Length: 452
Ligand SMILES: Cc1ncc(COP(=O)(O)O)c(C=O)c1O
Image (cartoon, rainbow, N blue to C red):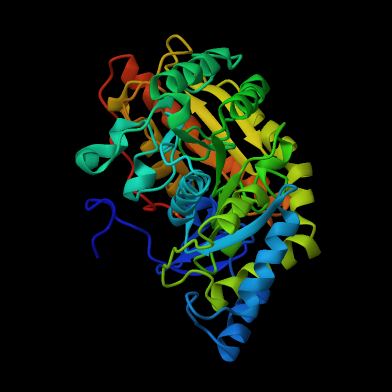
C-alpha cells in the first residue's frame, strides 16, 4: 500500500450495515460521511443494489462503448435525462467525479469549436473549489496549496473569490471579479464558468447568494460562455432535490455528477448536457470521442438504475429535503456555545461547520493547531466517521467540517451522529482554548484507540 498518510493508522473496515461500519477488531463506527466521501448515499449492505450488480454480471458484465452499447447504459441515460433539469437530455457516462468534470470541460470546449469559435478555451471558476485530483480538474481550483509540486503541469485559469460572510455577503464583489476576469481573458475567449452548485469539501455546504447566480446568468446571456456545474456530490439527491441546479434561477449547460449515482456500489459518473450543446455536435463533426474503458459499461449502469429506483421507491430525496433543515438546526443546537464554531450551514444532507479563532470570533484559526484534522481523529475515537477540510493557506477558508450522512439514516442514528460529532468538537475546542491561552500543546489522539 501507498496510503494517503504514511504515519496514520487506518481502521481496517471489514463490514458495513446501514450507517455502521465495523473494523477487524470488532469496533463499530457510525458513518456520518456516507462511506467517507459522500458517495454511499443509501447506506451499507443494500441487497437491492447488490442484486442489481449480480443480475447484470450474470447477463453481461462488460462491453466497451466504442463499438457496442447495452440496455443498462441506454436506460440509465433516459432515467437521468428524466430527472435532470428541463432540456438536459444527453448523457455521457464515465467512471467517477474527476472524469465527469473533465468530460464536462471537453464538452464545453467542443461546443464552441463545433460552432466555429475555437478561440474559446478559458474557464473561470471560484477560487475556493474542488473538482478532483486529475491535472485538468486540479487546474480549476484556485487553491494553490492543492497544486503543490504539480504546478508545471497545470494550465492557469482565472478565478473569483467566494462570496462568504467574511468577504462578500451579497455576491456583488464576486460579480465584479467575474467581470474583471471576463475583461482580462477577453469574453470572446471564455468557454465556461465552472463551479460546484453547492460546495462540498472546499467550503462545506456553501453556495453563493442568489444575486450572484442571477448575475452569472445575465453574463452568460451577454457573453456566450457555458455554465458547467460540478454536481459530483450534490447530484442524485444530496441537497434535497435531484440536482442542486433544480433550485437555480437558470438551467446550466452541463452538469457533471458521480458519487451518489453508484451510491458507493459501483464506480460511475456522468456528464449531462443541454440539448443545445448536443445540437452543436450533431450539426458539426457528429463525433464526441471520449473512450475510457469503463464508460457506460453495463455493470455500473445497472447499479445506477437500481439507485434511481431506490431513491424513487423509498422517497428518499423527499426525506432529505424534509429532514435536512431540522438536521441543520439540531447540529447548530448541539454546537451552540462553542466559541470556535462560527457557522453551521446546510442544504439537505450536505451540512458544513465553519470554525474561527475563538479570541475574536472571525479570524481563521492558526493553521499550526491542525483543528480540522484533530476533529476527525477525535470523532473517530468517539466512533464516528467525519471529514473535515484543512485550510490550504490560500486565504479563502479556514478549518471546516462536512457532515453528510446517508439518506437512509434513521432519526435515532442522526441524533447519535450529531451527539458524537458535538462531543468531538467540544473536546477539540477545549484543547484549542487551552493552547491559545499559551498552555502546553495537548497530545493528539490516536485514531480509534478507544472506541466502544
Ligand atoms: C465536488 C467534487 N468534485 C469532484 C470530485 C472528484 O471526484 P472523484 O474523486 O470521483 O474523481 C470530488 C471528490 O471528492 C468532489 O467532491
